[in-house]
Structure formats: C-alpha cells, structure tokens
Image 1 (cartoon, rainbow, N blue to C red):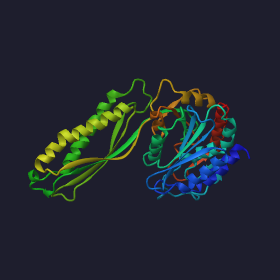
Image 2 (image 1 turned 120 degrees about the vertical axis):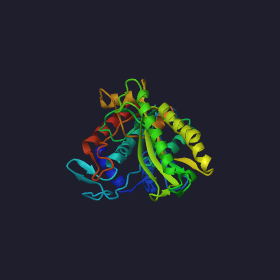
Image 3 (image 1 turned 60 degrees about the vertical axis):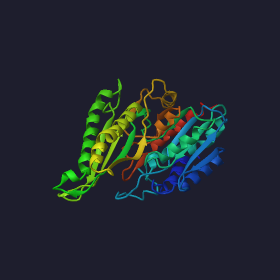
Image 4 (image 1 turned 180 degrees about the vertical axis):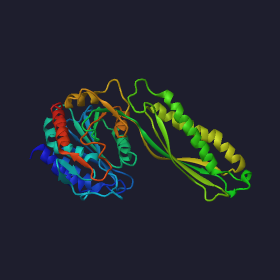
Length: 385
C-alpha cells in the first residue's frame, strides 16, 4: 500500500475514536501501540492517576540519546452545538479533503508518522526516532507535562522534537505561551448601607483587574528586540468578572477569569510574581483589617509555556531542509513544543492542515497537505541511517 493510502486508512480509523478531552483516550492509545509494535517499535504506555488517560512513547532504532521525536496529541475538542455536514467521527472525503473531528488537529500528522513506521524501522540504524502521543493537550497540555517528567529520567532522551500541529507545513520556530487563571475573592457580606462593616469582594476584584491592566500596559516595554509576534509583547486579557447578588448587598464572593500570553519565560514569572505580591501585600491586608477570614486564591486552569525563538535551533534547520522552506514564522496558538524545549530539545512545529480549520464544524485536512507531510517524513527517514 502506498504511504498516502496507508495514512488515509489509518486516519479514518483514528477519527473513529471520539477522543474528546473529557473522555478516555485509552482505545486510541491501544490501537496506536499495537500498530507501532507490529512495525518493530519498543512501546511504553504511561497512564495518568485516574487510569482513564495515557501517553504513548515509542522508539525505533538504537537505544542512544540524540534521537528525533515526532509528537502529537490524541485528544480533540468537543462538537457540542456544532452543525456538521457529515458525522464528525466518521471520516468523509470530499473534493480532495478529508473531513472529521481531529483530521487536522492533529490526527493527520499522527497517522502519517504511524504509516511511515515500517520505513523508520528499516532506516533508523544510526539515530533513533521516537513517537510521543499525548492526552489532554486541549485542556492545558497535561499529558505532555506528565510525559516530560518521565522523559527527564530516560537515558535515550531525544535531542530534536517535531510537533505536527497544523501549520500548512510551514516551519514554525516560535509561539506565545497560554496561561489561564481564575482568581477568587472571599469577602464579608452585609447590608449595602453599611459598607464599612463588610468586605466587598467585587470591589477588590476590580482593584485586582486594574492592576492586571496596568501590568498589561507595562509589558509593552518588555517586548524582545526584533519580536515577530503580533503584538510583539506579552499580553494579559481579563475574560470575565463574576460576583454579587443584588444592588443592596455587599458581595461576599467574586471571581476573575484571566489569561496571559507570554512571549518569553521571564514575562511569565514577572506577571505571576507581580500579581501574587499585589494580592498578598496590598489587597489582603486591607481586606483582613475588616474581616480576618477574607481571602484571595488564584486557581491555575492551565499553563502552557511558549516556544521561544532561538538563534540556534537544529530542529528548525532540519525541517527547513526537509521541506525546502526558505523561511520560518511564528504563530499565536499554543502547542506542546515549549515543554519539550524546556527539556533541552531543539523544537519546531510543522504539520499538515490549517489552524483555520481546527475546532470548527466540518474540520478537514487537504490530502495534498498529508502528501507533503509524508514527503517530509520520508526525507527524515533517510537522515536516520
């Protein structure tokens, strides 16, 4: 079977697994593990604490460090309230496109790597190739973070990582991080006519928001020189404020949902420290001077670090040579690439499909994009022996 036909057949099977992040991914992991083992890979499956989710890590070639990692996530976003022209969990071909939830984000890349596994097994005589298929990328890269802890202790850790998110096969060398938080304020309820006896949780939430917005303005001056991002600096967004029950009641509870998109790890730490210090040293003493049980607690919803642009990046250089690209780009969406970069790997993002199709009804990947991905992977195989 030709690689493209094999890829399409595997992708059809993978789309049949409704691996929404809220559900188990064990069935697809078992499927992928069996395919890779049949091709000669050494396969490890790492379950999460619940036992309902798992990461797959597989290796072909010599057991030495310095291999190449092909990484993708198995989970997909929900189809709730979306109207599709066909069953989202039964792949359909129309006009040179393959439709289904996850076709581009990002089971297409996974299918291509598995279809090429027999070729990797034959070619990887000098340098190993690794496969990393993770859970819960869409809800905070939870699987990749867990896998990183396991890879940190392995002696055969890869030196390069290719993350196959949908980039239309463009070579992406950087993206911002995405960190989401909910900050909860506990005050003291009371009658609106006696504000001095209560602690207005909404009022302190607004003060917290004001400091966030001041910090957002300050971040403009911290933009890295030559930053290619739009905007070039880290940003903060306040998504919602909840609190209060009536006009004449001092609200005893409020919650602020906010996120930041750091372009560099220094900004991530700066923002968190600034807001932590402001809450602990400014707001809380004022609140507790009236009511000792007042509190401010920040809940981490998800922290996905960015992929920082590096002057030297062997993964970028390799994929540029494989694809024939004469330039690179940065993107605004997040991936698992920064997690692998923090492990000391050179990392790049390049895969079939467009992010414009991800998460939407009638998600699709163009067959021509899969063919281009296969060409890249076949070229990679020739570099392993």
